[in-house]
Image 1 (spheres, rainbow, N blue to C red):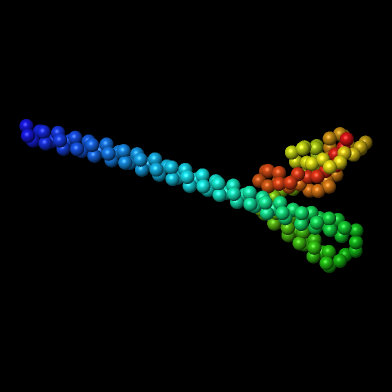
Image 2 (tube, rainbow, N blue to C red):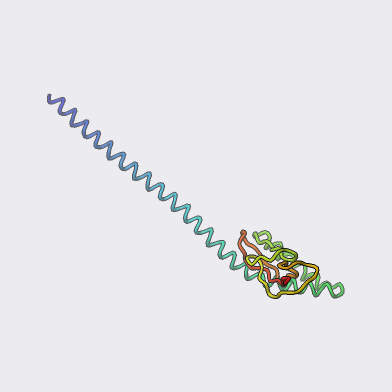
Length: 158
């Protein structure tokens, strides 16, 4: 009898230890899952923060590109000049850089006006185009990761 009581006591201790072990193991698994989820969320948050900063930087570059595009239009009216060619190469470098960073041009001219992508600066009358069509792009618009970085400023047919 004494041996049986001892075995029951040992069995109870083993069961308690097993239960305690399972509780600790479950807690450890939950803590591990929480840590993995935390790391994933921190990675997403960091990526969003990087994207916002990138967007801010890219937005600051766009006016520089606009000025180069205006200069390029003026250069077309003049004779060949090595200085102008140099400026045009810089413009191309900026455009290439923006493209590599994921910035895309918004097609505007000849497209149907879309207030999400276009900002109407002026309306014009036209017999050759139907109403609601962008007749001229005044300032190029850009997308970054399928989000409007800057809408295109356009003239729209009345």
